[in-house]
Image (cartoon, rainbow, N blue to C red; front, side, top):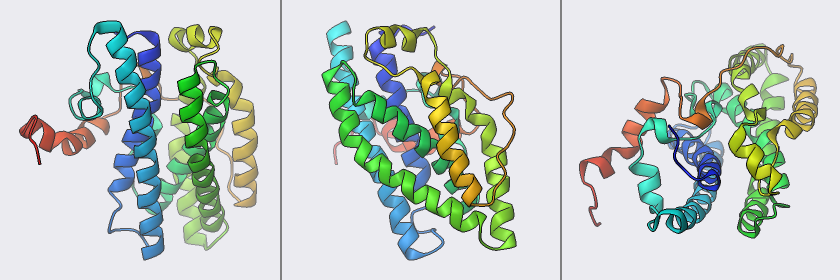
Length: 256
């Protein structure tokens, strides 16, 4: 049962998306296909981690106001179990090949830009401020991942095959991005949050344009995996968290 105040839960959704995807991208450090791309991937991960920290900092203040004590950024990141994470299922999917990583980034980036653009007009001044700051970085991420989708999709037969396969495999996780639950709807009513249902049409248009230029086929819409925002995750999150949280769990409160 989720006992978090609605605003806290919403902030954790935004923060966890960035944290989990940043951790996934960090797994590429030193393993990128070329040096420049190794560095670029790392920088995208650092951007997302920085955004997550801003959301966590605000979440801590909201939690403190509600309970008398707000958890720190480290506690949010390293002291929660899998069922307490609120990220989209898409971002926790494993890296796979570089085509898989790019497809995951592309599908998320196009949604992320639209979400941040909407949140930049939030009636909550703190959310609007964080969104405006994050939007500049996310816009670059979206441009970069789209360029790679086009480059791989419209490249060799092998790169085209891998890119199409990656899009096909990850498409089943995209429907969750446009679901609206009671938490979001209550915050939408207060002009705090963005109604994710309103993002589907512009996301479709942006994604379709890139896929067309990349000579890739859009997968058919249908059943989609859901549950991440309620703490129900795929089998991939647990092992990732075990690695990410090991040091803090093994040596709690250690000072370096």
